[in-house]
Image 1: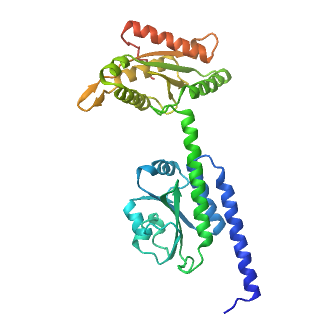
Image 2 (image 1 turned 180 degrees about the horizontal axis):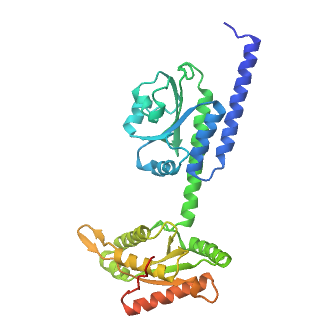
Image 3 (image 1 turned 90 degrees about the vertical axis):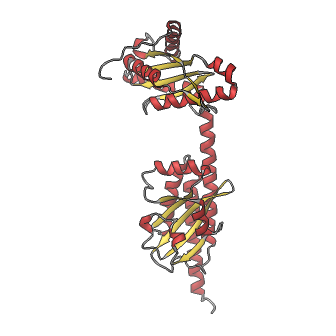
Length: 346
């Protein structure tokens, strides 16, 4: 049966509205800088623009998706709106299809992609694949109580467009985030690099000058790094530095920041920490360092630490704070022991 003119106009208006909604979603997510914000905006915009009450994400559980999974774990907004599924379960649900899959009364394999709260009342389901850098990363799932909402015989062109646009934007935001991360990180240890130290230190010193809060700094130097390199080789030397970096991050507070300064030297910024508190942190580090295990061989971590505090400087500058900590480090290397007084009530 041929459509009437009114029906053709009605379909054209619906298609125009869908196209406009797709464009607005693309604009909303195109320039987002973080993966977490991307997922939050995507779920919110799709639900809002298309009146979908149950929008969720399913990611395949593999190492390549770890950054995406971590982003979802950090999101309070998306709690209960995402899941991680084994690769075998994802393939069972989608058969590896890279185009939208529309189902009425979906079976258990497909329902396994949904959060538990969405499963009981799902009458129809649209599974939109999400690809990242050419590989299948997971899916965005649109569930509805109406079994006719996503019928297998309906035109899925616009859903396919949404899937492609979301995938392209996801790849772009992940690439931007990775580039930003690498620009501020040391590639070996993954700690923040020296350039980031300089920028962060300037910001912290400005805060000190404005508010008068103390700022301390700890300079850490590995004592036996050359001997480790000479005896075990550079590969083990790299592992030594990576192990040292993890140890620093294990001990410091969430508000403290560790940096790789150069070679086997590290710096820890301790905001709102006085000298006694900084020395206590140094004492804790010295007591903590577990050995690096290379097979059955334990390699002890040995480091000298010098601390400095803004309260002891006549003029608070980044150079003065670093110089004071470096001088304290030199003195500690000469003394060959680290007997920092442990203050009470720190």
